[in-house]
Amino acid sequence: MVIDELITLGLNFLKKEEFNNPPLELRLILAKLLNVDKSYIYSHGERQVTKDIENQFMEMVKKRSKGYPIQYILGEKEFMGLDFYIEDGVLIPRPDTEILVEYIINFINRYYKGDRINVLDIGAGSGAISLSIAKYCPGAYVYGIDIDDAAIKVSNINKERFDLSNVELLKGDLFEPILRLNMQNEFQIIVSNPPYIPKEEIEQLQSEVKLYEPKLALDGGIDGLNFYRKITEDAKKLLIKNGLLIYEIGYNQGKQVSNILDNEGYKNINILKDLQGRDRVAMGFSFDCEL
Ligand SMILES: C[S@@+](CC[C@H](N)C(=O)[O-])C[C@H]1O[C@@H](n2cnc3c(N)ncnc32)[C@H](O)[C@@H]1O
Image (tube, rainbow, N blue to C red):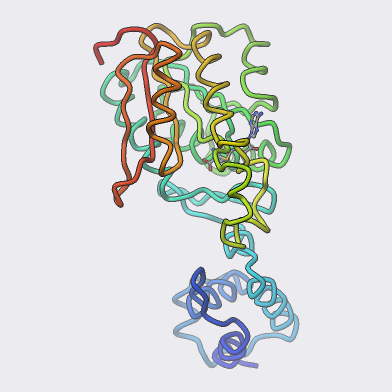
């Protein structure tokens, strides 16, 4: 079969749904299998492909037709201009999280440019947040923690992929690995994009997420706020005075997470919104702060 025929076959199989883009995705899948650029697929429609490639292609197309995320099929997701390796079992980095990371990078450049500072990322996943900060802020030394083996494996692969030496990925529950290192009051910034979906809402998420992404990365307990409560309380022991605690939050959690920060004594609490005007980031500073 030639490339164009295979794409047509795929189009008959993979129907357009709300969450997919069959013409593009089929070309991306085939480009990956042939180890070529997507543009090659457009310009080489007459190229013959082997039976083996045909079979692999159709296997991937079938998986995709059941909602299996395209990013897991391709094994890659672009985030902050970096191509992250990802695989089953690890949350796919979301474009919304770039708002949080961009804020932190600007904050470091503004207040700590060139300084050697410590940053802690709780729930590192693929390393999207930890590694982007390490990459764009070479003065920062970033510790990324995750409780999940798959996350530690994948984030370490990405650390090597981006050739970073200013980041360390530690396995453990929340702050436990850092407390073991005795790093009390040594962090200028603590960041987290924790699991924040209320337990009961997980069933209502689109099937791509609900069926295939790890529950451990989504489930924030009954009201979705469990991790914000725990992290906000314990972060005080690890932050320097005027240290920044900053979170990604759900679109309707701004008020509640602000209250949690306020109750724990953080100052200069602020919410950032996404382009749709929904709450996306919450932050506060340990003790009084002029920043
Ligand atoms: C929403 S994901 C965020 C992943 C990544 N930081 C990102 O933004 O793409 C939350 C992460 O928290 C991790 N996690 C869940 N419970 C944890 C715990 N008790 N301690 C450390 N990490 C945990 C999950 O394994 C998952 O990787």
